[in-house]
Length: 396
Ligand code: HEM
Image 1 (tube, protein in one colour):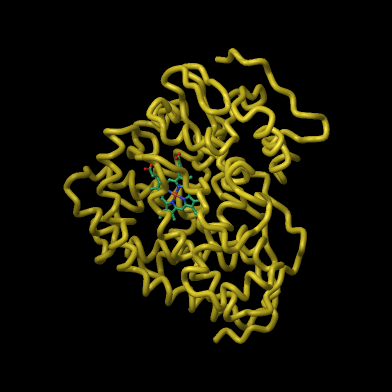
Image 2 (tube, protein in one colour):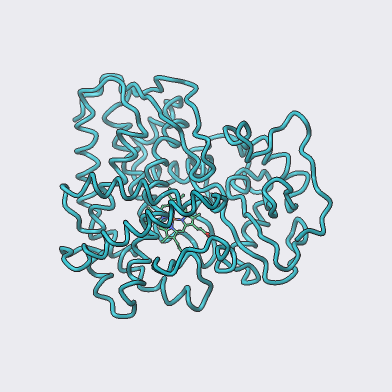
């Protein structure tokens, strides 16, 4: 499905999805955005859309389908439906009750507990010198958030973390058939765990969702499973990605300590813009569509490259720099349009809280390795590890 002339990147640039290019895809994204923001990519065999206006249009325009976009991944009859793979009006029917799990009232109901978990987590680290922020902060934080949302007990921490880790291989829309099969089986296991838990859940956002008779049980499990797949790993990895940018910048750390909630949330958004854990998402064009940067034909499989859009100089001044007071910040790290991340408020709130408290308790924290390595996975964008020197903070 291409009518376009194949495009070649200049020899000095690695393809952003090649093993080398994955480690630092931004130079290739910059080139593509400025030379061909909408083009057919012969390596990925789909259309790559890299301009901000183009990506926003793909995500918002009904001419692009999320349902058709995922059909090729054959989720299997035994798996619950996912709102991410439906289009309106089906999508709206699944998403509206999802507010019981992730809407403002649901988040407010667990905010104090999550804040306590953040403090406990940092306190446990206080005696350590060097910690791996990915394993020891990001992962445990994400699990704590889900234990609270789902009303799970602390004794479920290990099982839940293992299930969430296994299921997160479903995040990558470019995964091959073998990985997709593993992903389906992990999803089945997670669904069975959540199904058993729904029957006995203590009062929590999950129990309120489970009691909503607008959804069948498989649909409820679909919302819960999607929250885990779409949320656990991205939230966990955001912590390492954020600290990688933050810790070498003491002035931004000082702003986090002194600027209050508003400043911390503005910084959090800027960190998500710079290092989006979900760098792209897929759609299918239902007809020929003219985007600002070019035309895609009917039936085209399209990747909206959010990570490229987030550094578009037409929208963001100094796009490759951390600008801690950037407002407005119309980044697309949470997507846009009908599928805009249902967990965005939770992520902003929890992420800002963690960063502010960490900056406060460990004012001398620094990177123990100034060149940590990025994992070769495409989604999420993540560091293999991020050793952080806590610099003798007292944990108070
Ligand atoms: C930094 C962390 C996160 C990032 C970067 C992120 C990003 C995204 C993006 C880009 C989408 C849209 C995908 C598309 O349009 O195809 C999305 C959708 C979604 N996210 Fe997140 N997400 C994060 C965390 C979470 C968390 C913690 C939860 C739940 C607890 C969550 C729940 C969802 C759900 C349910 C959807 C589907 C919405 C729909 O289809 O209507 N996300 N997320």
